Length: 182
Image (cartoon, rainbow, N blue to C red; front, side, top):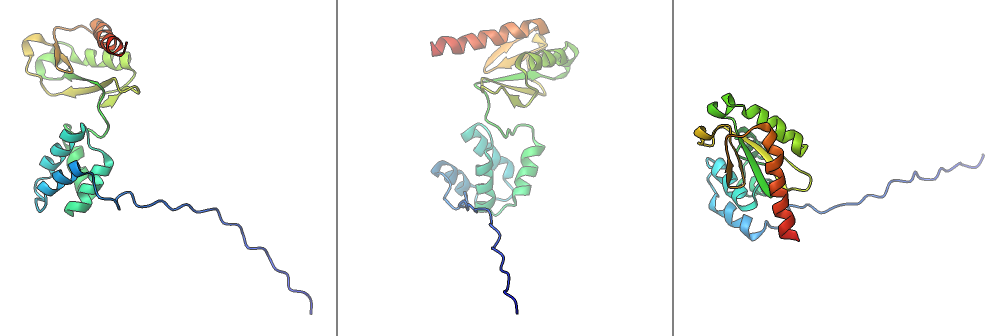
């Protein structure tokens, strides 16, 4: 009888276990929102509005907590949040630019304003610049039809615009930030 050959056990990669991020309780401000919606499975839109009102967007972790705490499937929460364009999934920029796409603005060339703004910022609609200075959104109507085409930057209304003026307007807001930081 010969010697029995033994093989060394294969080396397994080191496994690192991370704790469940939802094992902790939600922050007290989120918990207060969730408590107000307990048992109200028909109020998902209002719940999402409250969460976005608190954070400025819908953080993934907050949606996960909402699903768990309120016993609402996460897929339902996402279904509602993605159906309505009022909800955002990333933090907004310091200046949110809204470009009106209503009839008067459309006829007056708002699509050219959108193209010009996207090119000037290097982003597309519903995105934010990497430095989080600007976010770009389109809206159905801003109610400023006599000023068409119109954009709103923060709370400032800019009307009767041409695509050529977009760069100048954006530069004004960049300078405001530079002045505050200087």
